[in-house]
Length: 451
Image 1 (cartoon, rainbow, N blue to C red):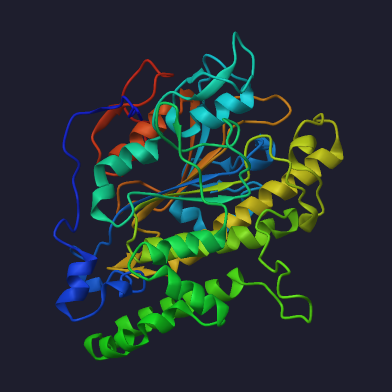
Image 2 (image 1 turned 45 degrees about the horizontal axis):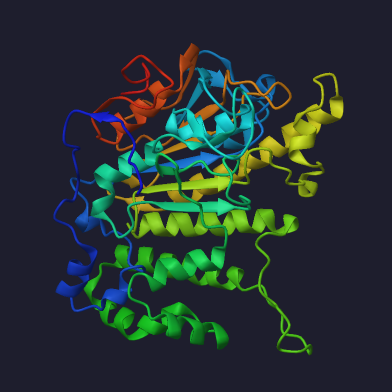
């Protein structure tokens, strides 16, 4: 039986759009429920010009190079370092959190504890994965912060949360960061095609029809063509433009999910896209980002995560002229090639974060954009790879969460427990929480985040 996390909440969470049901709305205008995944949240459904608040957690592995990651300057007038430089366009939407410590107590090695503690703030249970430090470590001992938040707000959407992955590997505590409770890891979906099928099949599109469409190289949108045509007259010109762009994004995802090229070889040959192949890591990343943004824009979920690889990641970054990530991260600081290649790897991750932010900023909501209404948090399991350090672990947030966070700042802390950041995220998502996880004996949120 799954055991839920022991976090303490002292008030009922505030919720927006409590009366809104996508299926009820579609039914009221005569549309089929199968259209639910295709229609973005209309401006007329938002409360007072503000869209729904969302939380997105991001993970990249093996630490960073603090001297090339940390900004310079002052809290309000800072310059991004080489690693975060690709995110320059979003300086006014970010908070760089320097000096946080991921407290690592109990069983497990640095990677295990860093991975399991990252979003749970909790020690690992005993288990069968090894790791030493007094015994063999198992799974985390409590839910992750996204699931605690999803417990409060997940009932408002078709999916309480969605977990996207890029080559995360098998089920070990080195490869799982999201937990529904003690000893209850939640695996991210690593197949873009499987995620696409899930988002549509679970919401009223018949799976047999989906398979037939794939066989005929047709679009899932063909299933609801007549309904879409009937709805056109009911929308304003601005809504029509939004929906048109959204549907084209769905078609683009479908085209890139199916990379098979017709040949004269036997039809029994497996032409499916190999989402686990190292060389396809960048392509899978973009597909997962596209589908995550689509699911958020459709208001299918308000809590999502994207996990690039896993702790001890050995992804080979040949597309940026770098080798195997974990091997490189363990070389000495005097090794110039290590510095150059690990910098290139982390810059690539910054570019992927920018791709996500660009997509979120392109979705208009109320008086702003989806990014304005969201909180995106990017973390890592280590501070630096060759030391397996736990401070300062790099964290950056993006988006204001409907005005909850005061962005455009570089904040430096004196080894403050990152559990306080997790508490602050819950508070920013309107969940009244004062403590989270068992690694931090104190209480309260991280000072300085709120507007």
